[in-house]
Length: 135
Image (cartoon, rainbow, N blue to C red; front, top):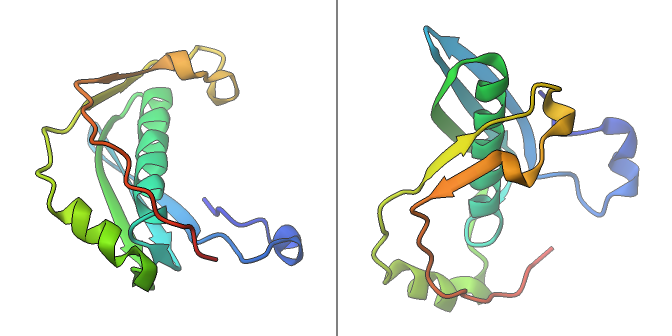
């Protein structure tokens, strides 16, 4: 599935960094592989990981397959120089246990999905680390 709409590329400041996602079925499981042409490792990539992981759960719920692996391939991963202090602060943090996501889409299908269809259990967060967006 392509994340690009080629006809709209001239209207964009820069093309989307996430290019396409491919789903694979193995037995009762569904996996997703995202190819991203460029990735701001501090600000953009965490959002892309969360978004496409949610999409994997949505597609799994709609198709009856169990979400399993999210594979992320990045062509140009980078950390901007003015993010170094923020990244160093983040690296000092000890990750907590991963939360559990469940998705129960409505029977009408993907176009009817709402925020209430998701449940995130045992999510723990740290305080926000601010950094200026580049690009």
